[in-house]
Image (cartoon, rainbow, N blue to C red; front, top):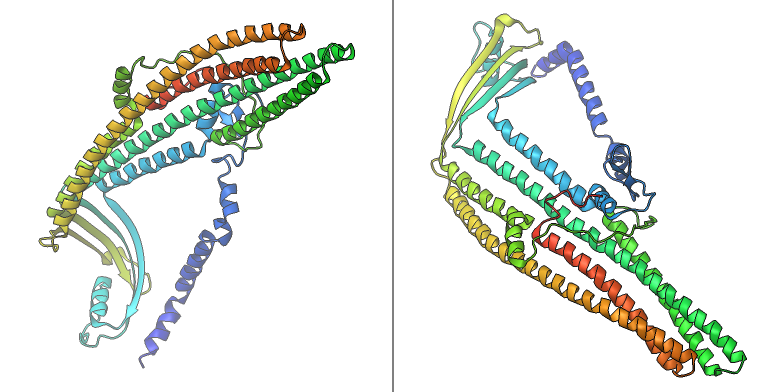
Length: 494
């Protein structure tokens, strides 16, 4: 006799149950398809978000950067391509979006919630039978409260509620979310600051490598020209065979220098491609640019003042100090009670034959106050207080670190300027010396060894001058990074 009600229940509601179950299964199978969660399908779905091993270039009509590198890039082009494609920058942008979403989530706590539900239940528990039959307004007369029998019920309704007071937790959580957003923006500026400096460094390294190739090729041309002249003189009996062999060895060395310089350029461009967020196989051609003035502080004291206002690391730690203070207040808010208003409107029926004459509603104000929590709230407060002290110490450490970074950047700039001044003077002297020795050698007044020494000294002087010039430009870019300039401005304009 105990199984008869179950058979009766299935016969009355089987169609509705079958439809609900099948619909749920179809929706579930569609949402959790294995094909949807493969690496390849995800990459294909979000192909427009990430340039997969891509090349990048500027689209003239829109001014945006896409995944195809076709033309020689200027420094400004390179910076814009890196900002558009570099994975680190994309990660920073994605984190900013996440933090922005968390602010919206925190704001949701200030709004009421509203929900719709439908539930099915059955059983023979006396309490369940009585409550459901009463809510159905179908309680039979002369019901045996100790053994009322089996019941089934469909309930459909709307639930709503709103928090009236929770000790300021929602406000504090929103403030924390806002500081998280500020921190993520500052992290993005920090990534841009370092990224732009890296682009400039690598760009100048590529230009320097091109200059080295030109210097070594000029050396090859010079030695080849001299070798042709000496061959003529050798056939006339004017020079020794050993001089010819020495020149041939020097020519081989010069050609080796060309290969090494070309390989250095290829290596630099491969690293450059990684910074730009494109494939190492990309054929990147860089344009020669002239030195340009960057509006940076001229001395260390002004540079430190600028850095303490604009450097991302300093601004980030400021936000973290603020956030730690908010977290301390949030931990103390756990001492306060919570008051909520909740309401529900619903209808019940054993066969879903709802009738508005048998509807129900409830409303309640709920007061909750944790009087004793085993000192866990006190422990959270102490943890938050220690976290604030940690951030204050980190603030001091960050400021000292930034000052040292700025100091080193200005010292390196002064060193680079001095080295460039010496190099420019020495290259002129080395050129004149080489011309003189070459005439002397051609006239028989200087040995081949002296000729090689002068030629090598001239090439090295040109190499040092090129290196010193680009070191100065990179030192200027490094000052921009040290003071936070590259994360605060519109970078370099064409």
